[in-house]
Length: 430
Image (cartoon, rainbow, N blue to C red; front, side, top):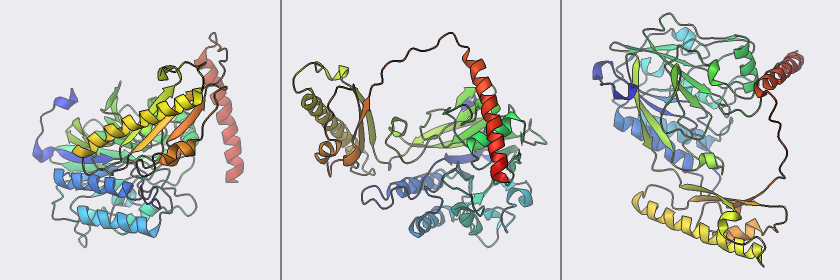
């Protein structure tokens, strides 16, 4: 296995990987306003402590495409604090800066600038929250122009995409770093389907091929995602941003591994956001790699629980059913708060108030009690008292078709959908 390789310092490229930082999320909240900045600072401090060669971000550095001055200022302050240091950059960037950074007046990486003292370079693509629509610029472009980060993977074409890699060399290890910023999923799906996305490589066999992408991985509709089969087989590792749920270890997909770091801060109260948050330490030597997940200790605790009337143990025909269910939910929140208290005694860097979300599954006949009144009992005890509880009403069962070939049906509908999209986009572009 690639996890068992033996490291050599002279040729080992060490990378700190994180995605979906979402700086500025809930910045106006007195309770959660600092969450994204604390976890970003922890990521940067880990990179400095581990003495990595560079930091690789998978998009959505900012939560808004027009972040506030305060958010941009705090971001710049943190990057300068941790990345501008005496740490010696021990790798070379061999690729053509005129191509890699064509979008900037500065056709080189920040650590190659004699006027800057960069010890830990940051390489990043932009995500869907770092929207470049309009004038083609996003806040990360400003950071690039200031020499704080190296923004790569920008593209102008809407019909085809030529993904040229950055070539990083350290000792005998050569890394081909592919990546591009977020594209509307339906459009990118169609471009891949038509062979309009190309990945040129002069020496794919001798390079470790790493691809960074920020798109839907989970299928939401027929074309609103990027299938894993679209990824070129020459890749050795794919780092998948945009999906906030972290996967503990890289997954093997026939020809390459996929790493899904997840977000560093919870931006929604969904089950995919609950649990620990991570950044990853990636070591590459030759064509081999190993990774180490590092659990963040400054993110806010978040517990998500599904509750059904069946598992409450309360008979559905009992008197005062709603009051008994509400009492059960109160007791359940209390037990979760007790669990959080024990964790916070050991991990004192975390914010004191946890996030808790109960999803209560009920039927149509259940008389729902007030969510806001329920939450008021836990003001100053949880970070989200007003949306601590959500009701989900069970839908009536609908007979399903089992004799239909779903693959053939999906392919037929996809073709029709793509043709419709092409006609619509042609009108919009004109």
